[in-house]
Image (cartoon, rainbow, N blue to C red; front, side, top):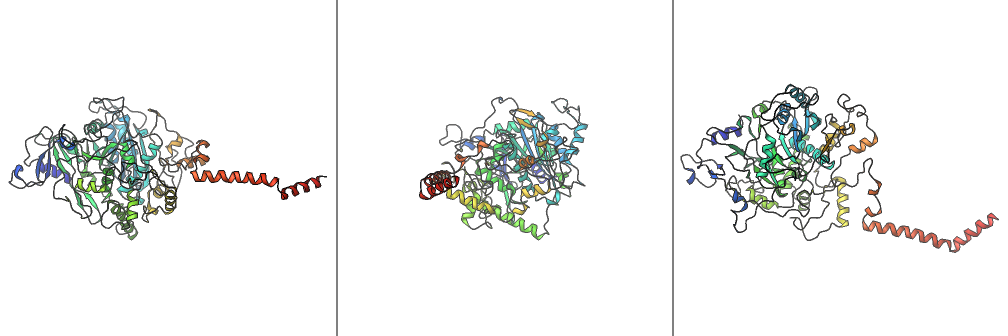
Length: 630
């Protein structure tokens, strides 16, 4: 039984206030034999009041509510949103992975709208292949009924296999869950650049031992819109799989993540609290769980997982929580259980932590550097002391957002980053909270900030609403050249561990894709071509694409194929792909000073030739040639 399940089972038996129309939230340990109404501040139960998130009911002076969510034009509040749901799953030697895929599709109201990004880190000679095993399980389900959806459609030998985009890595080069998720982040970014993911699609991140409830996709989309916040992220540590529905006593109880603990190396999410009968998703203090995260895809694209922190286990969730919140995103506890974990079986997996090599001095050295990087970003003790390097990292691609400040996060979350205290002021952050307002970016919620491919420094100058704005709205040529020079060693971002970063691991160890999602073009699907089967992120070091899984001809790659496989980041202009038009290059694309220099050089050459024709030297040469001709 999981710690989450134990705590929820105990808590629901404790005294709680009368049921409120919007539910109740447990704040902390209740004092023995003391009524809740007289317990110390921060303990017992409290009524959930959604209006307080905006500062009070309508008419309250200074009332501010989150930026309202957007729906696609072809949907209404009563229908299931037709947006695609992109599900990210990082699996390390997990025998439950096939069951997760089966549950994902089988319990979906609209399985055709589900797309999967799957990273398999396996001992390929001994471990069960997640996709192959899923196909066998799915075949057995052919024609069976699933709730109110009717009989399962069955296309070919493996239903929905064309919606699974899988990347394979050898388990012996795995570098922990944070690094694995960073690889999936790159897959998501590439799919967005290729037009396969829209910023208004939904993105879901789960573990590979997840159980999905009936109609989970409908429930998650509905809860997202119930939050009434375009920047909402539904996230919590999932309940145990036997907690679907109501609990003993008729309560609809959900896990509520609102605390942290400080480890010797970093910050870790605390044990789950609990809430009952919530009328809508509840705003939390920014505590985020990688085990379940559901949002619009612009969140995933703006805040990708940092690939420069291999071997990290503690600290990865806190790192992303801070970055999400400073980008303007708000974490909400889902008010219904739609997704759970099989905690018992996952704990029985003896391979789950084999990626750790704590007895390896080199591995530990890399881990130490990773923690220094994460501490630097959050301003924690033990990070980089050079303020210029700290600021540069915080402004980088995998740094902080610019909608809210780090200081605002500390005050809102109650997490004393500098002093390792929680809660910082002694007050519980599990109860009612007021939303922290921020100005949206001038280019809107769908705008994805651009960064230099090598230096990872921002390309665009901060707009006036940015916390980084200092009155200068331009980026000087000198600054741009400095960024280019720093890019040679990747500046302070890599912290001497780039020999273990994502690109190297993928290029040298990943097996090529043999099951690819269909490409979406203008709302219509087309069959994946042989070229599509070769993933854009990297190439296999040994061997070609499995000829049994890929159409004939896909195993041999041309120069054009290799070019197309190069990593492409949104906003990059220096890469040209086969078939790209030459008109993308030209004098007008150069910096103004270079343009002027080129024009002056050309005019100077022309003028010197013209003048030479009329000089003595030129005339003597002309007469000599004429004399020889005679």
